[in-house]
Picture 1 (cartoon, rainbow, N blue to C red):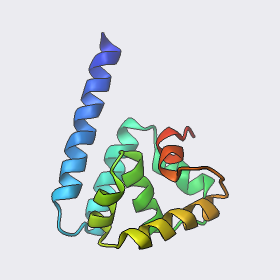
Picture 2 (picture 1 turned 90 degrees about the horizontal axis):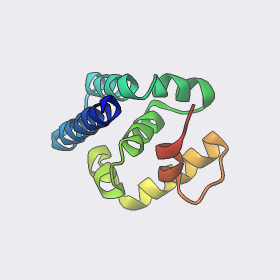
Picture 3 (picture 1 turned 180 degrees about the vertical axis):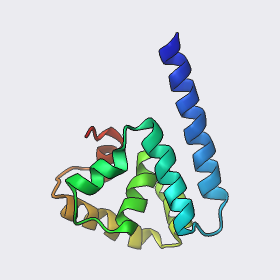
Length: 115
């Protein structure tokens, strides 16, 4: 029973977080830190582990990873980051290179990544 309550709470947090991100015109550095804190709170310091494991990642890369981790769609991410879909495709490719991973879907890789 407790596990189901935790999962429901987590889903509600993710839903609220996605709504906050999507409703914002422009996320400030403080907003990104808040997003990071929420993700870290239910993902066991995921972003700190990403930074340690993949030190070549830029802050923009981290932002993309955060959005992928909370299961935002490609279209939602391009809107939030104010980039074209083609630019996002290039970013995903560069992320794979920086992280030195080979996979069909960087989104699936990030969503399922256990550090």
